[in-house]
Image 1 (cartoon, rainbow, N blue to C red):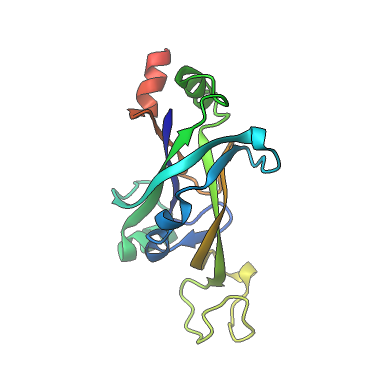
Image 2 (image 1 turned 120 degrees about the horizontal axis):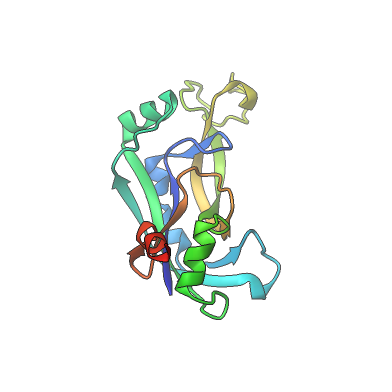
Length: 187
């Protein structure tokens, strides 16, 4: 069974952070081959449910419900997101119908894919340091509406979760069938 997920985009996330379009375009080469878990359960092999087999960065249609700061981002960069295909271990997921039911109940409809990064940058900072944690930066984390993650390093998590940090992170398709269509089939 193959599941396609949108795992991040270049908009501001729930924790007041964002990736630039350039950083998103680096992610696909870093994520392929990583294993996934259910709801951040890293410690057990039994909780591994699949492996990322392909990934892409996509310049997509701009969402309608943007905040003023997100609108400024897409005016500058466009709307970028990253998606990946995960080959699901059937032993850990009983069936496509079961997965669709879990999605409908919102237990596994979202995903969390975490990347480490080198530093945080203020979105409109003019200081030479560029790093929000630098003593040369006049801003503090508490004073800015969001920060940008810079220099993506590696993947540290691939997990289905109930509430993702990235608002639009979600399952897009199961075995090539859009989730919305699978849910309609269930009714």
